[in-house]
Length: 602
Ligand SMILES: *[C@@H]1O[C@H](CO)[C@@H](O)[C@H](O)[C@H]1NC(C)=O
Image 1 (cartoon, rainbow, N blue to C red):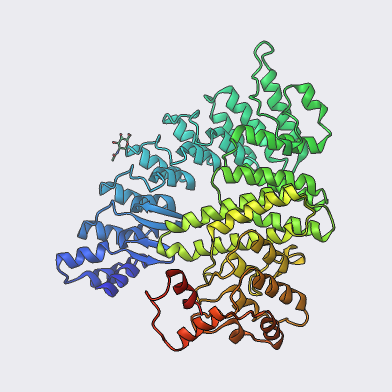
Image 2 (tube, rainbow, N blue to C red):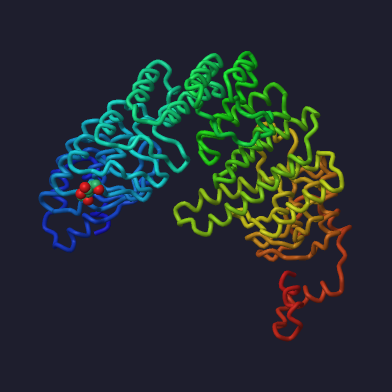
C-alpha cells in the first residue's frame, strides 16, 4: 500500500489524471482514504496528492479528486515556495501562492475555507498578495476572505503587497477597507514597508513606490514622513544602491514636511545616542541637517539612526546596513569603527534571538586580520564577543533538545560551527595583550562554556577539538592566526577547568588524540607542550578507549611514543587496575565505588 501511495502522489504531482484514476480503481473505501490522505515526504515537502496537485496547478487532477473522491479541502502540508518553507498550507493556500487561478476557483467552489491559515497565520489571500495576483486577490475577497488577518508578526496583506510594490493590489485592498495605519510587530506600517522596498529596483520601483505612497492618502502625516526618511536611509548604507545625494534629498524633504507647520512641527522621537553611530543624536532641524550635507560619514550614520528609530531594534533588516557600513570601515583599515558597529549589530541580533553564527565568525575573521597586520585588538572587544559566543552555543544546545529528527543534522552542523568559532576566538585571545583583570574576565567565559560541555557529533569536547588537527579552520583571514592542535588554547582550557580525561564517542581521551598528530618533527614544540600540559593536569597515560587501546598503543610516531614514555608515571594503583582488567577479575561491589570507575578506564 505504501508504495502504491507513492505512485498516486507522483501521478497527482505530475498532473497525470488518467494514471491517477487507474491507480485508484478497485480499492475499498478504507484503502482509498489511506491513499488520498497519505503524506509523502519528498524534497523537503510533506504533502498529500490534493495539495501537491494544487501547488503544481494541475486543475484536472484537483477537479477529479474533489468531484470523484470528495477529498477534504482542509488537508494541510508543508510546501516550499521560492526557498521558503510553509508549514500547515492547504491546497487553496498553495494554489493562491503559486498563481493558479482556475485551481483557486475550483477549490473555493468546493467550499474550501478561504480563511484557513498556515502555522505562521498566513492566509491564501496573503499568498496571492505576495505574488501580486490582483485577479486571485479580488476573487478571494469577493468570496469573503478576511482582509484583516495578519501573520504571526502582525504583518498584514496590505503590508506585503506594499513591500512587494504591487500597487494595483494595494489600491484594491485600500478600497476594500484595509487599515493603512495598522502596525506590524516591529512597529512598521504598510508605508514603511513600501519605503523599505522603494530602492530595490530603481527604474520600475520609483513609480510604484510613489503610487503606493499616494494611494495611502489616509495614512498619518507622521508615517508618510517616516516613509521618506526610510527611503533616504536606504541609499546611505547599501552596496548596490548607494547614493548619498539621494539620502540627503529625501531626508531634507522629510524635514521640510516635519517643519511645514511652524507652530506645530512634527517632532522626532529621540533615541538615546548610540556610541557605535558616533554618539551623536539625529538631526532635529533643517539647520542641523544642512550642517552635515557634505559630511558623508555623518549622513551614513544618520541613515543608520533613522532605520533603528523607525523600524525598531528588533527588526531583522536593521542589522544588515550596519554590518555593511562596518565592512566598509574594515576595508579602509578603520577597524575600531568597524568593530563598534558590528558589536552593536551583534547585540541587536542576539537580543531578538536571531542566529548569530555568521556574525561571530565575522569577528573571528576581522580580529585575525588585525592580529596578522599587527593592529591592536582590544581585549574588552574579544571578551564581549566571547560572551555572545557562549550564549549562542547555549542556545544552539537548547534548540537541539526540541529539534525534530529530520532537522538534527543541520542543527548539529550549526552547533559545531559555533564551537569552532569559539575556539578561533579563544586562539585570538591568546594573541592579545591583556591585563590580569581582563584575562580573568575572558577566563570566566571559558569556564562558563566548559560547564556547558558542548560536544561535536563525534562527542569531542572543547579540549579534544583544541588538540585535533582535524578541527577545521575558517580560511578567510582566520587561518593566518589560528591552527590546531594549539598549545596555548589547550593550556587556557586546562587552566579554566577542562576535564583532562573526558572521552569522545570512541572512548578516546585528549591524550589518545594528540599522540596521533602527524607533524611531530616540524611542529615538535606544539606536540611536546600539549603532552606535558595534559599529563601535568592529570591525564592518565594508560587509559583505554573502546578498542582497549591506551594512548601508547595509538601513538602513530616514534616521537610521540618517546614523549609519552618519558611522561608516564606508572603507579602501583594503575598497574593493579590493569591487572584486574587483563585477567577479568571480578571487582564490582568488592572495591570502593570510586575505584570502580578508575579500574574501568584502564
Ligand atoms: C472569513 O472571514 C470573514 C471576515 O471575518 C467572514 O465574513 C467569513 O465568513 C469567513 N469565511 C469563512 C469561510 O470562515
